[in-house]
Image (cartoon, rainbow, N blue to C red):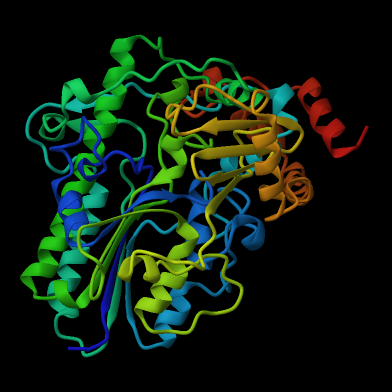
Length: 489
């Protein structure tokens, strides 16, 4: 067996990083025993953030080690190009055996026609908007059903099989990556996991004191079909919490296998998520905002030389994972990385070189403009190209329902200056719009030639769960809005 440490990297999808027993959440004290035990054996990052509250851009930041405006993974269609170097590239060159199982989804060219076109046309969407999401009611499967998310469990089985048959006998270090699709909507669980959630710890989120234009637009696009009664809000949250408990069970199976094979002491284990989930905070589900349930992610690391039972409060983000993997493998950092290795925090609990802020950005379909978030200390500032900002004091207002941008103008200006030290966000928004128009023009040309343009546009702007009878035809008035946006009138 190799003397160089192995790496097991587990990433789930849409997990709010605050929702674990080790984070002190009142509903989760019995729901995440394996993650809580992992935190006791290693280091828990209390304030870890995604670099984009959307699937492909968040993953692209992890794989490239760059912020979205540098790697230009603008939406769920535009990720990294196939020849882009990633952390996998360097690990493989260094002699690591790679085993990639499950969801990765960081490359360009995938997802549906709707995912690409709705992102490209986000500005005319303000006029064209028809519901794009129909949210399914939460569902609880009766009985002690363990394998609710069966595809994820098949990937867990594949990891365990590989560890048992291959990893324990190879003479080179390995990196095993497991991408778990849960706890992504639709909200479905079983009584097996629901019973672990403490009823009296399931809080009902308060209502926002004002409606920011971004929030108003997001609700319009999502077009959720809930009555927002306390009963439905509580049910959605309980089912979502239970889905996290199932993810915990999956992670536990992989860790148990490492222990059984005697690999735990020679293996770094990282667990995190790409982004979180509203779970009815701000009367929303899904992601695509900068509120805490969406941008806060779990992050736990164990392994050789890692502090045990440590809880780090420093602000970190997913872009830090790439240089951390390089340090774990004792590989020099490639140039152009935006993150900072977590190793100083993991070994000594301090890092004087690390900035005291974290950054996130969003350029996808559920906003009519690009958004940019920076957090420093207790303050979170969100700027939008062409729209007013938001400012929250997370210590005094953890639910983020009171926008202080007007009330605390000096602090807002300070955070604005800090953000502009990272990027010119109007310029980035301009680059995104240039890409959007160029990509849409080419797509539109091809499909007009194929004579299916109007049919596709009607389907794209008619919602997720539709029948042929429900599709609203694409009209000349609709096309007029598109032409005005493209400058063709």
